[in-house]
Image (cartoon, rainbow, N blue to C red; front, top):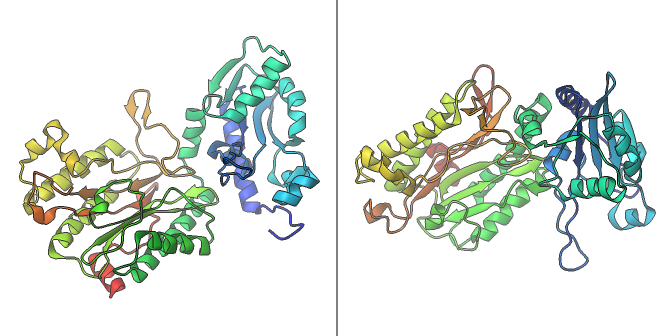
Length: 437
């Protein structure tokens, strides 16, 4: 940011945030919701870890700075959204850059804006009007600090005030994305897909996994994303069989498959993409057979994604398709019943096929509601990520298959008509081999 620059917010973002807050206020039923930004964390010296905002606070405010608070409530018949921002300080701005201040915060469409120094005075007055306080004391030190200051240090009692954790309450709102969020997630996917494709084109034998990670993340930053959504998994050879491999230090060798599970975050919203491809440009026959089984399974599962479908049903179909496919290929020397007995199939497919995606990679939102598995709804974004991992030394198959690990993952928006794949990144065998050629 240039010297003296102020924070600017697009009208579309301000409008989307204001509409979001109004929906949440109406669902509070006379309660008050308090959210706080995540505190910054010191390293062992005078520096800080790179700041990452609390996703619930960001969902309500659109702010990526610390020492802020949001209060939502209905006062009388009037919905109120209130933002507390850190007091501007000239010395802090010299070190860390311009602060948002009251003038900047006024752009965000809140009904009222205060300095954080006013919170101990204003919040007790607001809490007196509520019978339920929705907040996140369990997971959030900032909220605990605020409430301790008001309730204990000031000795203010709130008789009859019920305190509820808002994690599930807000999670159910976050689960259904509005058009503004969908656009951001589409952009995150576009940036990440371009980074994956760059790696497919530029990787070569002798290059290290770490170099490939650097190329991947450079492309993400060049595309406009300041963060990865999670630690990038860049694996080659039998490292592909480790689901959350994060060493990223081995050289790429002749005959290796490369598995990259990585996505950027854009305006806070995550992408989550996995591609597997041959470093030398062509799959071996065995690699291709396993790859095409995973790809066929993924396409089938994506076609099942629609309103009313349930993630456990997607998982069950994935287990069946992968396992029957491996048996048919002669890779797994078991019957289907034997593979299901004692969850033996987890030896080659140990994870789930899908999870929610949004401000978190494994995003907020309940998977079970009133004891029932939650059906998918339009506006949800989920991953579809089948994989096969034949560990070195696996006793259920011949050694020719050992060390083959393949996962393919796309980000899927549930629509009223079915689904839309947000991930436009090569995954057909012919396309991958053409890129490498």
